[in-house]
Amino acid sequence: MSFTFDQLADAVLAGRPVSTEDALTVLRADDSELMSVVAAASRLRRAHFGNTVKVNYLVNLKSGLCPENCNYCSQALGSNAPILKYSWLSKDETLQQAGAGLKGGASRVCLVSSGRGPSHRDIDKVTEMVGALKSEHPDVEVCACLGLLSDGQAERLKDAGVDAYNHNINTAESHHDSIVQTHTYADRVDTVGKARTAGLSPCSGLIAGLGETDEQLVEALFALRELESDSIPVNFLMPFDGTPFENTWELSPARCVKILAMARFVCPDREVRIAGGREMHLRSLQPVALQVANSLFLGDYLTSEGQEAEADLAMIRDSGFVVLGSEEEIAQRPVDPAIRRRGAGTDVLPNA
Image 1 (cartoon, rainbow, N blue to C red):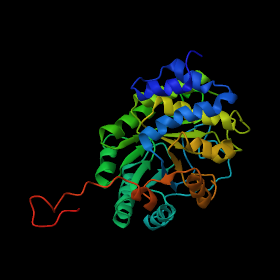
Image 2 (cartoon, rainbow, N blue to C red):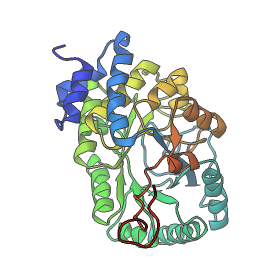
Image 3 (cartoon, rainbow, N blue to C red):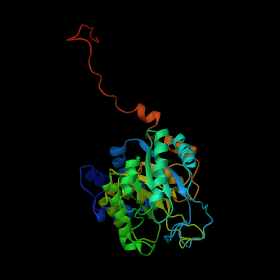
Image 4 (cartoon, rainbow, N blue to C red):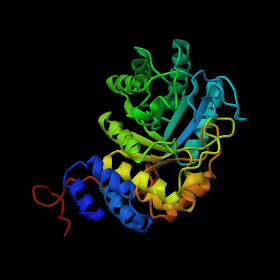
């Protein structure tokens, strides 16, 4: 290696984007170099996000019964995974679920539904939910994740108060057709573009552990950089029984940390979110991963349970971070300068 990871961080902080070769070097670092990789990537994380962690909360509006055949997904066509299956939650049920996450410390609520994409009636449902949620919690960020969007739907969501739209590319274009055949990679990219054009913050990420090569992981991260994804959820495959990927175990905790570090080097100023599968794959290295990533999901996921929210919040505190939007984080923000109203030019005694 002709450079150290710290030198690579210096270059990125000076404004030089990493190359594919740089990214592969991070990903292929020996496990004995793991903490050197983390320390270097952490410099980028702190330069852009300080000591904050953004907490997100998922609400699964509609579970299972999806016509798409994504091989990794427990909700997909052909999956026999014994998950909860239900149609749309009511507005009141959605508010109750979202409220639990906000009470637990989340600042963003992600409203997710299974399916290829929303109908216009589905958009009606979601916009009503968003209006009620924003009325009750004016400061909440809302991210919608409803599948492939048709023309005009992103604009309707934006007008209703949705802040961001999530649609993951999931894997590299060169690997896409081996994991799903009912839609194309271009379909996914098109939806991310529709969201951005409508003024929604694009949120798009990937799933690691799908049989992809190192080069394909790098390809996916560079594609997300090109797509200008503001938020990059990094999921780690959860090999549900009853799916084509059952019993697929390709990831180690150190490998997962290096994937997150690579994401930080490739997209230094973007939100890198530790998403599904973190408890299963990162295990005791979850606090180490927070030195690289600056965001996570609180509690449960779409069809699987996560660790207790209190354990997540304790991990954040114990790692020396504060939750974005919490009283602790607000208290440490710089205070606007106080305009002088006394002393010279006034009749009030100076502060002396």
